[in-house]
Image 1 (spheres, rainbow, N blue to C red):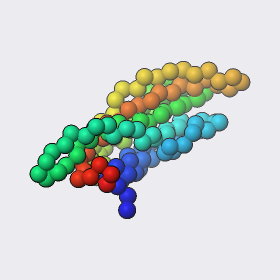
Image 2: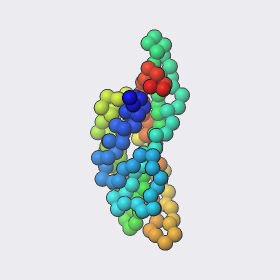
Image 3: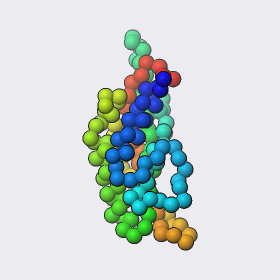
Length: 139
């Protein structure tokens, strides 16, 4: 039986799959970036929870990360479109079907990466904060 955290990460992955790009979870960067761009969801860190007693509950602000990568001509516009699509996918359901209290992406910090013998990459890590509560930190 998946944990609350896993259900939430699966729901975030499903939301990202509405973006017109290749979407992976926990994979290494492939040798070639698909034409529509690439998103890799990283599970991130749940951090220290706030705890309430009676009833016992753990309140997390889990920071997952999305690696967004585009390559080739027009990568500036493609990267901007990809980031906007991620924002729209998150905004479409800020509770991920009721699994989270709130989901919010943070601004990317893009970098240009030179690739020897190929077109340059434009990439960024986009933090996504998942606010949720669970009765067990391992559940």
